[in-house]
Length: 291
Image (tube, rainbow, N blue to C red; front, top):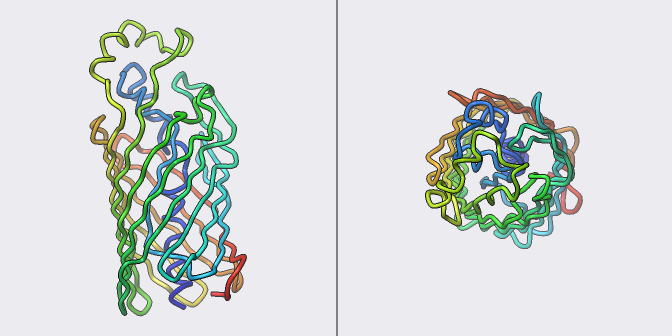
């Protein structure tokens, strides 16, 4: 019962943070600050990973896939997780197909980035779980198309899960080191408004990584063994580029069978990032005892 509850709570949260290969509000960034050099770096297509309190039990092999979309972009993620022990989970995945925009607001599509990670459950009690995670983004997306930066990113996270009767929550903190997007290689890829600025701005933006922090809180209520609702809040700050993204989210988790779970959810940006993202995600238990 608890395994099913944990899984339903984190399916949408995982995809809201872990597997979306482009910034959810990339079109808003381009429109709002199209002539600003800072926006050039913010608009980089890259995966935004996070951590949740769920750890796959020993010898469990799970597959998650589905679609994540809004009116401008979408993608198809494929993720695997394996319980190496009751406390250690190995994970890997990639964006099998992604549609987004480059900085010139041209539509682009293709394979996204991949990742590999390790999660460790270091504390578990009657009501709480605590985990840490390390993860690396593998640059498999096309840098030439601007589907990715062509560089490795590094992600670290800490999560707390709380469970009491039918109520639960997931509280997560993430820290990422994002490799800076390269400067345009040719005049074709430089927006006209920025062509006269880049040489002077290279000294200002002469760095390797953009530190980014993220915090999310997602409470949930389990109405039955097969159905739950959740909502929450997420805040992300790029400390190097002085840029914040705040979102509210909500959705439902449904158990379709003892080895298949479905999540339907959406996220809405607050303030200048007023876009939305929706998802439909299926989670399959391929190996291990049923939930």
